[in-house]
Structures are given as C-alpha cells and as structure tokens.
Length: 306
Image (cartoon, rainbow, N blue to C red; front, side):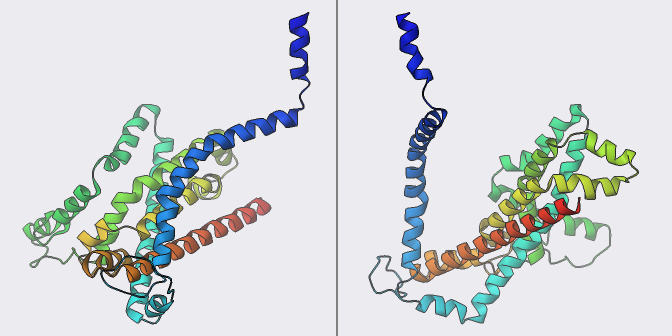
C-alpha cells in the first residue's frame, strides 16, 4: 500500500510538465554541440568578417578599430572581380544542373534495379568518395591531357592530327566537379525514392501513363525533396571548391576560390581575402535561399494542381 501510495503522485504530474522536462533535457544535451559549433565555426567566421572591414595591409592579420568598406568597394567596382564571381556561379550552376540530371537518372536506375544488383551498383556509385579528390583530379588530368588517353586514342585512330586542348578549360573543370559531386546528388534522391510506395508507379501505368510521364509527373515530384537536398549540397560545395578548379583549370581558372588562395597565401593580403570569403558566403547563401524558395513555391503549386 505504501509503495502504491508513493508512486501515485508521480502519475498525477501534468503531461505538459513532463514534455517540458524532456525538452529541457534535450536542450542540455545539445549545449556541448552548440559550444563546439560556436568555437570551430562561428568565432573564426566572425573574425574573418571583421577582418574584411579593415583596410588592406599585406602581412598584417590583426584587427583594429578603424573599420571601412574600402575593400568591398574595390571588389564591387572592379569588372575583373565581378567577372570572376559570375564565372564561379556559372560553373557551379552548370555542375549542379548536370549532377541533377545524371543523378536523377542514376538514382532511378538504382531504385528500379533488382535487389541482388542494387548493393553492387550503390558501391560503384559511392566508390569515388573513397578516393582522395586530389587523386581523382590527377586521374582526369591524365585522361584529358595532350598526351592523355582521349587524345592518344583519337590520334591512333587517325581522327585528329593535333591533340585537342581539353585541359585547363571550363569543360575540364566541370567534368572534374561532376565526378566529385555526382554521388552527393544520387544518395539524397535515392533516399527520397525509397520512401515512395512501389505501387504508385504501377498505378500510374495502369491508368495509362507512359514510363516517361510516370517518371516526370509522378515519381520525380515525390522525390523532389531529395533532389533539392542534392542541389543545395552540390551547389554549395561547387561554389567553394578549390582543388579541382586549381588543378584542372590552372592558376587562371577564374574561380573565386583561387583568388582567395592567392590573397591569403601569395600576397598575404588577408583583409581583401576576407572580403572574398564574405562575398562568396553571402552569394552562396542567397543562391541556396533562392533555390529553397523556388522549390517551396513549385511544391505548393504542384499540390494545388493535384
């Protein structure tokens, strides 16, 4: 009786109080992670943003209280830097679009593949992630070089007399980025496809829809969250990619990341390099926000139409 009486008051605790206690416990568990994020990301980023407001002094990395927008004015008033920023967005957008197309097709193939082959195909798709980006990039440099596999094969077959200039071009950069980021597009789309009821495409076919109509009008809208996740990841990483553009595009690749490297490492102009970092971050956030906004708008439109 005593045990039952002692346990009874705990059962009378309101459900709202119990939920509040669980939320407080969860918040307490998240505090260490928040501290790590603040120490490893937010504090260095804040330092860089404050550094961008200092006047350019090559070799000086200390902050001072004399804030100015002179470095931002220098960037925005220079056609060269604006052209580099535009080219960075262009290459990132082309890479993302190609990854979206090929990634959707590849994810659909994996989704429809027999169970005994599916695991092997997934391993093949993610295998590039197990190899260093530098190694993969040098591999493409061997393939696309003047004495590489493609030019050697074409000259052996007599199709060309002079090697094609494939390396140190925008096309080479796009090929390298596509190879690096394609798995990051396939996996989110495949995850979204796995959530679709297998009976849905069968029902569409029964109602007279062709395979193409089923794929474009039924399956892909349902897998759109995975596509948007992949687009967001690939575009953000392509905008900030350095190794592949630097190796396959050369020192004059025209990507803003190579300029950031030059400002920090070559000229030691950390203030202007911080400006480039801030502008790259701002543009990436704006573009990703625009992608998410457009996706939400089209999703609402699609739901209303249905």
